[in-house]
Image (cartoon, rainbow, N blue to C red):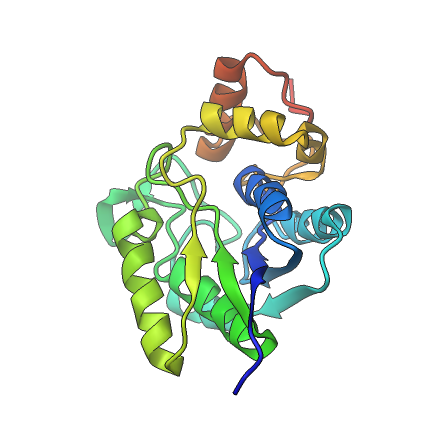
Length: 227
């Protein structure tokens, strides 16, 4: 019988605000945590450095960096993968979605995290998706997460639990949760800007949503923005 531990968790850690909050949440909830970051051809690879730093702060048992950039560079036209493009426009193949949409991204990320979890006997997978304050991505909805959870269990005839602690939280609520967890200082090591800029551009949809959340929470964002 394979050894498994319900007190262990792996966090999908992008290096952004939401995943950092989930990392802090997981640190409080589980005995040992692992983290995994994905290099998928995104413009803002600076987030990979942020994820590594956050993992160190959280004292993760292990931090994995998985490269799948060849896959996404060949199959998607998302502006998040391209080196140019307006993020305020619609996705090329669906005008109801933003240009930053990367089809099946969360499917690949969470499935890869589950593969690591299965190998290390980890029962809990923590993801930072939310269907409250989000960009309209279908793979951030609770219905998708619940469906994928069932699929992953069937794939290896084992049990997993995907935790999405931010699912029904606004960006304001996320900031306040981080405050409650006593880890607001972690946010200075996060990266959100779609442009991959430091200081952050403050104009892309991701920056605007982040700034809105901090403003509504009446808390100063610790990262710098262009004036």
